[in-house]
Length: 217
Ligand code: E4P
Image 1 (cartoon, helix red, strand yellow):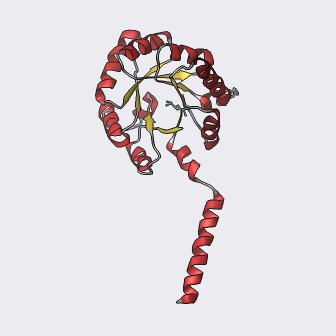
Image 2: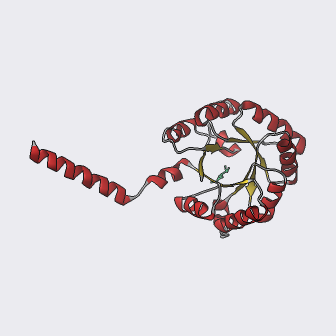
């Protein structure tokens, strides 16, 4: 299973990439708007750090605008993935860009019906938002189970990119269901490391080691 970080922060991406467990990056207009600097340049820097798929989203809502922006984004670097929203124009743009060999991530997916359309349009990735579904009292992970099953039934090659992850359980459930990727904010990746028994165990190992060496000395 691949792990992506969902952020526009170059500092956070550098820190997580240095751990050696990062496969890619997802951004969206809200995340990039928070960062200083020009967004094309920021995306280029992110590609140089992660050397894996980096999603950059179009802000146009019409087909022609999405194609124009999609070409611009794809030109930044070979690692760039063009992110389009799951609208009629977005699906049409996905089909056209994918046809040109540009990889597309169809975002803002909230139903299995939408995920089916993304796969049929040749999306490389589909991004179902689990946390935002949970927020409205709908089980986000149930949607992942359905999409994985549907894609398996028909051997669609579109990868299920579990987005809007809010805690490590989302990631673990996604892995159990066979989703391809989870994208998480840095705080969730950080939380995946934590277990009190690891800290307690390490503290004891080191204390015992020091004690034994103090006796010998
Ligand atoms: C996915 O690509 C989105 O950028 C992201 O996961 C949205 O997450 P949020 O619901 O926490 O904003």
